[in-house]
Structure formats: C-alpha cells, structure tokens
Image (cartoon, rainbow, N blue to C red; front, side, top):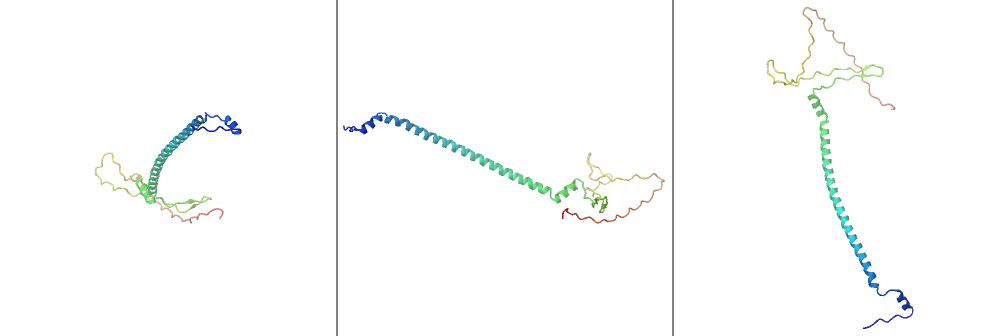
Length: 181
C-alpha cells in the first residue's frame, strides 16, 4: 500500500485548514441541487409547451370562427346590396301600392314657387276586377282599391259647368350653388 507523502512546511499548514473527510460529503448536496434544478427546468418546459399547444388550438378555433362570421357578414352585405338596388326598390314599392311621385316644386327664400308641381299618376289596377256576380272566397281582400265617386246632386237641380283650370306657368328650376365659390 502506498501512502501519499505528507506535505511539509507551508503545504502542511494549508492542508490542516482544509477538512479531509468532508470532501465527498460536500459534493452530495451540490449534485442533488443540480439534479433538482434540471428536473424543475424540464418540468417547467413541459408545462410551458403544453400551454403553448393549448393556445394554438384555441387560436385555430378562433380563426375558424372568424372566417365563418366573415362569410356570414359578406352574405348579409350581398343581401343588403340586392335589396337596395333601384329595380328591387321599385318592385317592392309597387308591391306595397306606392306610385312614383309627380314633378317636384321648390320654394324660394322669398316664398315664390319654382317649378310646376304635378300630381302623382293614378295607381294601375294590380289585378283584373272580378266580373259582376262572380263569387269570391270569404274574407278575401280585393287588390283593386275602390274608386271614389263624387256625390250626385239631387234630381232637378242645375249643375254648373266645371271651369277649366288655368294652365300652370313654367318656372325655371334654379341650379344649386355652393357657397364660397
């Protein structure tokens, strides 16, 4: 058995300051600390990776929902555009019994009437009236509006001839101006 030679002099004094038996015992807590830190780091990475993958699934679901809502919005916008087209508005107005307006008249700032106002034309009958004596289903409404009749004067009273209305005088329509130009 070979023994290590004992240090002499200054080396011996330094060797006495260092404990000889605790060298192996001091390494054990350090190794355990390193193992615990590495294990904690790996567990932390696993938790972080799981959270990121969960977030990516949620992001994919939200993107799918956004795409569906965008498609729905575009379909609704197409419907709005179709319903607000001039021919669709005109058809719907006729279905509701509306008629185009007559010629407009404008009032000037001094109270004068500019333009010739005109009455709206009479609405055309929506359906052909049933012949007299024809049976209609109970509770059915006729699409033909009743025509108003003027009350007839009693028998034997003279009626005055209707005076013709004076022809309207055409007024020039003012062109709009923009202030400051």
